[in-house]
Length: 210
Image 1 (spheres, rainbow, N blue to C red):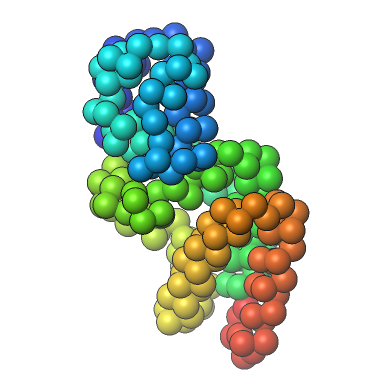
Image 2 (spheres, rainbow, N blue to C red):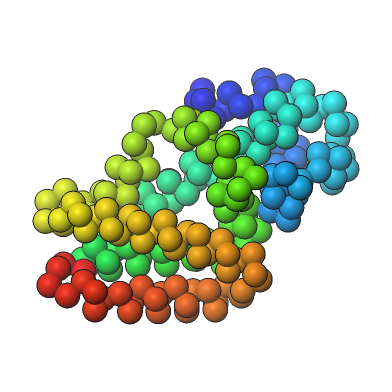
């Protein structure tokens, strides 16, 4: 059992899969719509048909539920990126590989807009105090190592400074996606905007493997 699994009580893990998923769906929808601070556990329990006492028996309050759902989503995203390694590395140089990774992320949003909106709620101001605890649920440096292996793999000759710059670009993209999704932009329009912006960066990377 992992640290992520420990966020849910044994009684929750013993529930039928259908019931666990119903609770998770209701909670994700609530957090995606209202963020961490605005989410209501009363609405969550009404939506999935359980007693409020049961919810708090399953998780350490709203905070524990929020972290559990984010940890599951984070683990799934890492697994998807690892599974797509071949597709991303085939993107060419570092900037091309970064574009492939962003395109994959956009495809996930298009396939599940609510789930993707939920994934961005951890970066909102009302939830940032939970980020250190969230990070502690994963092996140290796991995400950084994955980023390096995909965008600047060993032996690729990518300059470390360039790899850092690409990582900063990725962080900026995440914040831009968060703002644009909150503004209600359509997935197809968001894809066009971000991929066009990445393509325009190619001129800044002349002379490097981008």
